[in-house]
Structures are given as C-alpha cells and as structure tokens.
Image 1 (cartoon, helix red, strand yellow):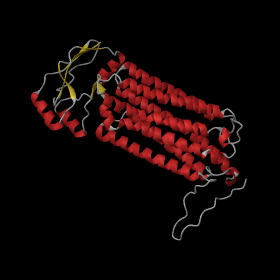
Image 2: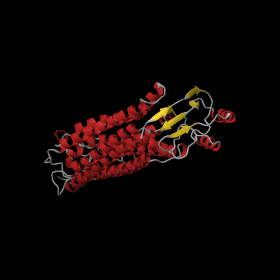
Image 3: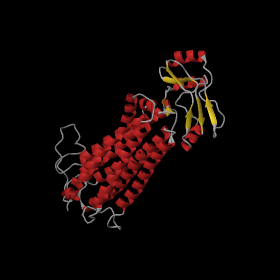
Length: 390
C-alpha cells in the first residue's frame, strides 16, 4: 500500500491550513476532538475536586488519591490515541503506509490496556467513597465486595486483551485472525455493566436507611446515578467493535469505537467526582443515620474554637468499633428543629465494649453564638443522648 496524503483545501490568504480534515475517508479529526475535549473536562473535574478537598472538607482520602491515579492513566491512554492518529489512525487504509499501520496497532493495543486500568480505578474510587461515607459494617462489606469484583474484572480483562492469538505480536489484530477477540470484549463489557449497576445498588443500599427527607435521599441517589449513563457508550462500543463492521477498513472503521472509548473513560472520571461536590456531601455524610450539618471552612474553625463538634464528625475509633459490631442501643434521643447547637457531642475515653457515649448539658450562651454565627436551621440532637456500643 502506498501512502496517499488527503487533499487539503486551499487556505484563504493569511490563514493557516486546518489542523485536521473530516471526510468520508478521514475521521481522525473526530478522534482528536473527542480525546482532547474529554481530557479537558477531566482536568476541570479534577481541579474542582482538589478545590473542594483543600478549601471545604480539608481532607484528602483514599478515593481522592485513586481518582488522581485514574486521571494520570487516562492522560497516558489519550497520548496513546494521539500517537495512533499521528500515524494515520482514522484514515482509510490506502492512505496509510505499512510501517505506520504497525505503529497504529501498537498504540491502540496500549490504549486498550490503559482504558481498562482507568475504568477499574474509577470504580475503585467510587467504592472507596462509599466505604468512607458509612460506618455500618454490612454496608462497608457491600462496597468492598464491589471493589473486589471490579479488581478481579480488571486483572482478567487485561490478560484477555493482552494475551491475544499471536503472542509474539499481540497487538496485530487487523487481519481478523484472532476470531475470539470479539467474544472477549463481550465478556469484558458485560461485567463492566454489571459492576456499574452494582455500584448504584450500593448507593441505594446506603441511603435507604438514613433518617432524612425523601427529597434529600433522591438527591443523593441522583448524584451517584451519574455513572449509569456509562452503560450507553459501553453498549455502542461493543456494537462497533464487531469485526464484521471494521474488518474491511480497520483504521477508518474503528475510529467510532475509539471515540466511544474516550467518552466512556473520561465520563467515568467526571461521574466519580460529582458525588464529592459539597451539596451532595452535605446530604450524604451522616452520623448514626441523622443528616449532617456541614460547615464552611471559617465556620468549622469557629465551631472548633468553641469546643463544639458537628454531627458530621465521628471519632475514628468509634467508627472502627461500629464497623466491627454494628450493634447500637439508643435509649433516649430528643430531636427538634431550631438554632440549637451541640456542646461537646462526645465525651469519652477509649471506646471499648460496653462504653457509653453521652451528651453534655446544653449551654445557652453557646446556643446564641451558634445562632448568630452559623444561622443553623438543621434538625439536630438537643439532649438526652445515651448510646451504648456493645
């Protein structure tokens, strides 16, 4: 095959020629746009998440670290796609030389593996977020189960894609000799969809037991449901990866598959960041099934300076005990609406079996300060809290 450059329309005097041309025989421009725009949205989502963790919640957890790694792998995957486009991917076969054809297949081979790793990291970040939001043992176990299944799926998928029919040159698949490759992608995609549905089910499982208005529950569930649309590009990608569609002209006909791959991968990172936005975190972060009251950074500092504790705070040793036991006896809890703060929510030493968590007496002056400083209108625990962790 001889390389034939695509016809470039004459540029108007004073203007540079177009960066890429989109035509019936050249779809590389669409691939470049999908990869570049997707990567831009991922960077914006990452910056928003970083700002929230730095300026609002003042914490950086494991799910945040995992999503940073996922972003790194998505950048590497996008670079692999750009390399393949630079060698002619997205163009018709007669426009690509033999040496470039080999380079395209190598780059796409690397991109497929990085794509699976990135998807696994986004699923892991979502599962770790669930584990951070709930202290209840069986809910944490459900999140861990999805995390374990996703990890096994990723490992098996990488081996299924990496170990193709020709072990000496596993990236070669344009000749159609590896007939079971499509079956492998079908299995990978099916489990991919199952894990996405499982993550959404865990979100419902955690939220359904919370003592909060139905509208707020729906808001929280909606935040986690933003991963469900991933099923759409997964399904379409599986359709276009069928060899019967692309075998006649792989570099050109597989461009739609790569475009859908970029959509799924980048949107997966963005959808994992959405529940971490402050409005959703304020509705999600709970303590013993009661809706939490999240403070701004300044209010939080003032709150701590008055030796008060918000309901969103939980001692780590208590959370560990709850995850171990999960048995809580509530004896007398008074709940009322109004601008009332809590003075020293927890007074305890080391939490052990039979330890008692009690609330101190109400401080009227502190209540007035809370009303003036924070304008609290949340439902809060006022007095008479006596819980025994067994």
